[in-house]
Image (cartoon, rainbow, N blue to C red; front, side):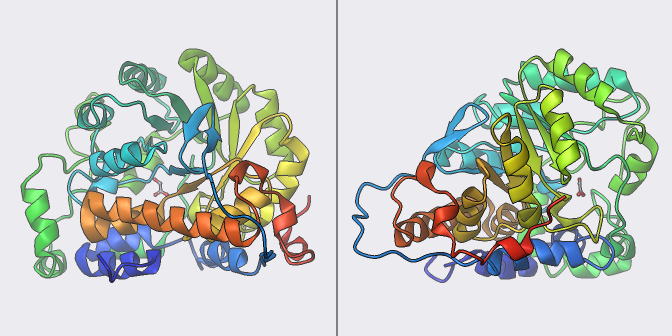
Length: 389
Ligand code: GLV
């Protein structure tokens, strides 16, 4: 794969190979997409401080996230409909993560089920992301299924009780599997690899839901399910209840505000993810990287602070770690790899990010990721981005 040297190469190839409605689902934000764009653009405004004549031998990017040893401070983010970017996508991405030595997080809204991923990875531990739905019995069953599948952390999403509007999904009539309308058939005819893959698998619906909820034998659209089933009344009491029921490592995803970060500490969670859901929920919210420093300063000594949103390179990971993140998550960078080349593409994405992280850390004069701090950033190059509250 000599022609694939960065995440952008994978994105371009994924765009060619993945049906438009699923590519668009991944590569989009809500409303004007200004927060979606800012997530990545703000990273690029932070400058690194080059050091020279420093011994660069014996480098390590190994660290820990939520008590787990990781090959680099990167986990795979939970992303909906991953198995529509490529047949059996969640299993393939989980295998790539396992081989690389980083956590894979399975979304509630995945195509492959919890059990599929457990079997597909020989029961290697993975993380499970939970949405809170009105049907508490279903939530209890999901938690129990995650426990039975050897999941080692629960990632509870707090910022998607109602769905932000993504124009492209509405216009494309997003559904899984895609409806066989004329425009969809014409588009699928240009994606032979994808179609072949899908013909070779049975996994074409929301695997954690269809067949597990009474009366739900097929369920096309995420938007419809969210509107009907997600609980808009989610509160910190529910977090407490879920923490008790789960009993293991709990990571709270979707915090942008210091006040919420403090409440997350009070809830007794193990980690909090500074996130705006990849710019897919509240358009107009600050970029994740600009929200990170204040939250890390306020609660970083009492809870592990992670971040996601806009990470397309190892340099972005390095900058997030410098600004206080103990770990980061990649969603789209993984999806582009998956859509482009299946498991090999996810592995390629991880290799690219790792190499960029390792070399950039060294250029900044550090050899151990655990020593990276604000000292590697050019003074004055990041404070202007900050959204202090
Ligand atoms: C979540 O599943 C999303 O579509 O952002």
